[in-house]
Amino acid sequence: MATIKQIRLSGLGGHGVVFAGTLLGKAAVSEGKWVSGANAYGSQARGGLTGADVIISDQPILFPHILEIDILVAFAQSAYLSNQASVKPGSGIVLFDQSQFCPEENVSFRQLGMDITSQVLKELGNKQVVNITFLGAVNAQLGIVETKSLENTIRAELPSHLVEINLKALRLGERLGEIVQ
Image (cartoon, rainbow, N blue to C red; front, side):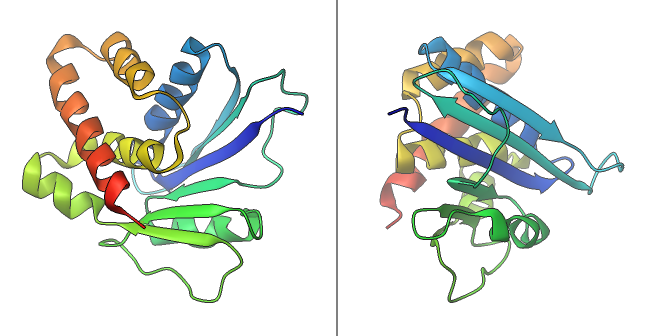
């Protein structure tokens, strides 16, 4: 039986959600996994709801759209609220930035709050890499792809002057993801 992970990253325009989803998908492809992806954008240039769906499997993907979310990464309260009903009951996981909002109680899935944004500002001083930090935290927590694959994808996809800060963000996220229970 195929191992399939249905992942949705969701936030607001400007959060870098689509880019993080693209990096995750490309890292999985580099490992020989089957990947399907789709992005959704609000009509606003900044501030509208955005999402990146990434389906990763060890076998061909028969239906390229998410049926139930295994992993939801919510960058904003509105992203959380608009997607929580699609999270798989029982085994689904929602990861969120606890400095940005509070999740609802008594839900049918596991919720993991991480202090992403404030740690990025404190340690890296650049809010633009919150998306990569989140990606590192999620990957450390759930082992979606190998860290080396994400690092190599960052090196391949970003201009050279942005690589180092993004690798630092990825490592910060890994550290934060490892300490969350």
